[in-house]
Length: 113
Length: 115
Image (cartoon, rainbow over the protein chains, first blue to last red):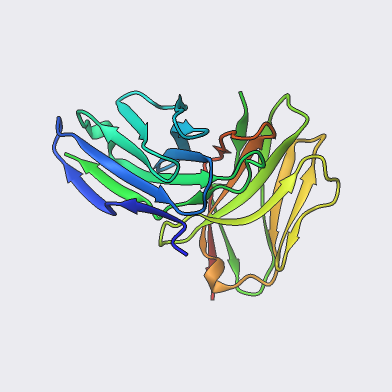
C-alpha cells in the first residue's frame, strides 16, 4: 500500500531553472494538495485540487503552477526557481465529501541556489 | 479566514511522563474538524488524532487524547506515558466541514522525550 508518493526526494536548482515535482496517490481520493514547509511557518498551502480537472490557489501560489493530470496525479511546477522557494514540499490527498484526515507524501527537499 | 496558533515552539519531558501541547484556533464556523499531526525526523506527516467539532466527547487514541473546548476554541493534545518514539514536531490543524476543504496548520511544537 504505497499511499502518497512524491518524486524526487531531494533536488538542487539554480536560480531561474525550472522543474516539476510529481505526486501520485493510490487511495482513490478526490482531493489533492501541495504544501510547503519552512522553519517557524508550519505548512502553508500552495495549491489544491478538489477533484480531477479543477485546481485552486492556496495561501502562497505565486511562482508555482499545478496540473491535475488525472485522479491519481497532481504535479507542481516551478517555472523559474528563486532562492525564496527553497523549502520542503509536501503533497497530500484526502477523501471527499468527508474531507478529513489528509494523508501526506514523504516530502521533497528543494534547494535553490 | 481561519488561523491556528501553537504558542509552544519547543517542549521537553522525561520518558514515561505526561505532556500537554496547546493549540488555539480562530473561526466563525460552527462545523469543522481539528487534527494533530506528528512529524518525526523522517519528515513524514502522520495523523495522530482528529476531533469533529459537533462531538462533545474528546477523542482518544491509545496514549493520545485531546481536550477540546469549543467555546474557548482550544484543542490541546495530551500524551500519556511518553516514549522516545514520540520525539517529533507536532502540528495542530483545522479544516472546515464543507468537504474538499483544505487544512490550515499551526507553526508546530517540537517535542523532545528525554531518556
